[in-house]
Each structure stands twice: as C-alpha cells, then as structure tokens.
Image (cartoon, rainbow, N blue to C red; front, side, top):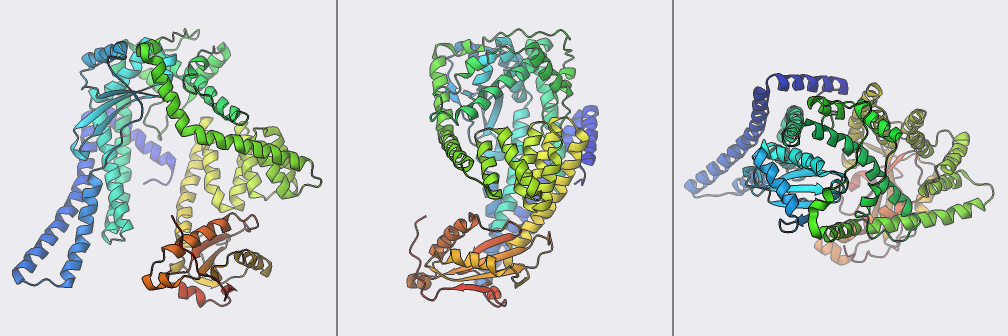
Length: 639
C-alpha cells in the first residue's frame, strides 16, 4: 500500500483525525468495507453455484452426462467447499482456571456491580491465568452468525499486585469492550480476515485457478480494510478507558496504568531470573507463578520509579499495537502525574479469590510447569554441556577460529557476556567478515545499548543475505525501544523492501523445476566432501549436483543436490513413493547439519525419486557426482 512506513503513518494519522471528527461516518465506512469484502466472496459463491446448477439442469434435460461436465462441476465445486469451510472458523476457548461464584463471591460481586453500571451482557465464564494481562473474549458458536459466549480472563499477577479498586478499573475496561459491543466487532473483524486468508490459502493448496483472482483482490483490498479497522480498534481502547473511569473515576483509572507499568518491571525480573536459575538447577521451582506474590512485594527505589514512568511517558504512539501510548491514555483521561508522585502499594485483590486461592494458584503452577518443564530441562542440560566444553577448550592450546566461535557461544549460553565478547573480538580481529560472529557481537552490543552494534549487524547481513532480514529486525527493534522514530522508520523501510526481495528470491530458489540449471562450478575438494558423506548411506543409488541461474542475490550462488534412492519392487509396483520421500528427507536433514558445509552459497536438497522434471537435471553436463551400483533397497519407514 505504501512503500515507506512514514507515509503509512501519515495515512493512519489522517484516518485517526477523520475518525475523531466524524465517528459515526467512520464506523459506517469500516462496516461498508467489511460488507464489500463479504459481497465479493458471496458473489463468487453465487456465480459458481449458478453455473453448477445450470450444468446439472442442462445435463438432466439432455439425458446425457459426459466426463467434461463432471470435471467442470468438480472444478467449480472446489471454491464453494473452500468458502463454506472457511466461513465457519472455530475459535478455541481461552485458557484459565475457572472460578465459580460460590468459590469467589467477592470477585463476582465486583463483576456484577460493573455489569449493572455498564449494562454489559452476561459473562459465561471467569478464568484465572498466569499472564500479566486481562481480557474479554467473545467466542462465537456459529462463526460469522455469532451467538457468543463471553469469557473474562484475569491474570493472577494482577490479583497479586493490584488494589481492589485498581483491579476493578482493569475489569471495567475489559467489560467496557462488550458493553459497547467492541468485542463482537473485533471478533467479527478477526473472523473475516481469517476467512479471507483461509479461502486464498486453501485454493492455492489446490492449485485452483480462482486463487489468482482472490489473491489479487485481497492483496489490494486487505491493506485498506486493515488500516480502517486498526483505527477503529484503537478508538475502542479510548472508549473502554472512559467507561472504566465512569466506574472507578479518572484518578484510579490513571493510577492503574502507572502501577501496571511499575509492577511489570517486577514481573519481568521474576521470569528473567528463572532463565538464570534453569542453568544451575535441574528442576524448576514447584511454585513458579504463586511465588510471584513475593517477587511483586519488592519495593522499587525512587530512582527506579522515576525511570520507569519517564520511559513510559517518552514512548511514542505505535502503529503496530492498537493500544494507545501511555501518555495519550493519561491525557485522554485528563490525568496529570504529580512531580512528587509516590506510589502507595496496596496489594489486596488476591483476597477476592476467597478460601480457594491456594487451590487455584496450585492449578496455575501445574499448568505452567506442564508447558515449561521440558524447556527448563533443555536449558539445564545445555548449560552443563557448555560448561564441559568451555573447560575442554580452555585446556587446549592454539585455538582455531571455529574453537573460538564455539567457546564464545558456550559462554553466551551460561550468561558470561564479557568472556563471549572477548572470544568474538579475537575472531573478528583475524576475520572481520565472519557473518555469524558479526551478528552475535552486534546483538551483544545492542543489548548493552551501544549503537556500535548496528554496524556489526549490517555487516553480517551484507556478508550473508539470509541473516539480513533478522539483522534489520533487531536494529529496528533497538531504535524502537529507544524511541528513535527516525532511525526506526528507516530500518523498518529497509526491512520491508528486503523482505519483498527475499521472498522473491526464496520462491525462485525453491522452484528448481522452473529455474534455469547449469553445470556446477564447485571445487573438486568440496564435491569430494559431499561424496564422502553420501557413501555413508547404502541405499543411495545416485546423486546429482547442479547450479541455478538466479536473478535475485546472484552474487550468492545457489546449488541443488538431488539424491536418488534404490526403491524396493513393491514401491515400484504400487507407485508408493512415501517410503522414498521419508528416507530422502531423513538423509537430507542430516546433510544440513554437516559442519563442513560451506556457508558462502545456498545448497538446496531434494529427492529425485518420483520428482517431476528429474530428467532436466540428468541432462546437465557432469551433474552426476556419485553412483553406487550395489545400493540396497530402502526399507519401509514408519512416520
């Protein structure tokens, strides 16, 4: 829609001004855009249905049905099935431990009071989860037709740290969304977007010709719809803030934002500490979430409070998140922060859960552990491996470049940033073009808030284009965190433009059947290295290596390594290529992890068995690099 993020932001600002000046007309425009998108899909549905009906009618009248009519009917029926299938998206219920009225009567009294004041529909379920968040979800039973169930989800951390009035403000904000039917509108917008995307996705999966029409339309239409609906949802946030202020007052609503920012620092510190503990403790604590109650009681110094609030006030409005900036929300509530503001921490909301508080907290702890236990074990084992490797390398004389890189990564893994940087600096001194080290060293510098890291990340992307997208993303995020909008916008534009080229390059390189192929020009030493590895597999019959003539990023060559397996007789009789396919994928996955693979070019792998266009590769001069006339048939592989 816009090539530069600056132009897009200006466009959104104009929409915001328009929405503020003419709110009803703006809302009407959003609804009309949604209706237009629905009519487009519905029009195709009726058109195809009509043609199918006409074909059936004519065939019945002529008492003759030929194969062509049947094929055309099936061809036209595919989009109809896809549209119907995509229109009934089932949204999953949010996670949380359900709390019933008899278990937490005080909490439900608070919810009832808010419902009476805001005239909201009934809440079907109240759930408690472990996130630092609260939300209202409206889950439609019948897709676009509605018939919603309303879920209120409250994060346990809010119950630990907020006063009852502050929690009431948070719940009132969330329930304000369904009071003004924001939740329903947001849900319908979400369903529409997913429906449209699913239609294109399923049709493309079927290689149906109509997918091009839908893709062209939605590529043009969706950016406008997304822009208009984005501003509408941001308006909803302001309106929900005002409704919360009607329930508890502007002062408490404003203070809730401030306390939310202060407690969020403690919440983050709690979980950041977990990643350190995981590297020394074999098992995670059994109360990972309930132990937050102690972490959130920590007193912040006046300096820390000033820094957090000041950072929040400086934060610019973003066009990636529908929530307004901290400052804009306070200004909309006419709330002014006193220079001598001193928070009074009144953590009493947890009492609202009543006598079953411990049981609820225990269930949430168990849920967190079920999802994070394996990851914790991985961190612990990985740290132990790194400690062992570091000891081995420290006892070794004359470390090679690879040794220093490995050592640097192992130091990073045990959170010894200083020693990791020392290793990387030694590598860069002798080899300033090592993209891997440039990338990690740049990230380390940015984590220390040093702008110097940008040039290392850019260097990494220049040396190896595959990591440039991630490098630009990190640079953009870095400047965004510093509220440096000018540099953030510059790198966002670079990221967007490069992303477009990268996608085109990936599409070009992944479609070997349509790419012009030529004789490979790799040194014999490298080819021999591949051949030596191929010899480890007794069921590989032949292997071919060719070069692609690519348009995008041509200075980074692209090669294709294709293997052909010896398939058993039954595979050939039944034309069942699943066994060969699975075995090829298995071999090629191991190939990708070869340390010796040269990183100065792209090497794509694919199986030749049953691959259309395989003869194209065989015709390239010197493409056959390996042949085993005594290869054994591949055995059946279980998924």
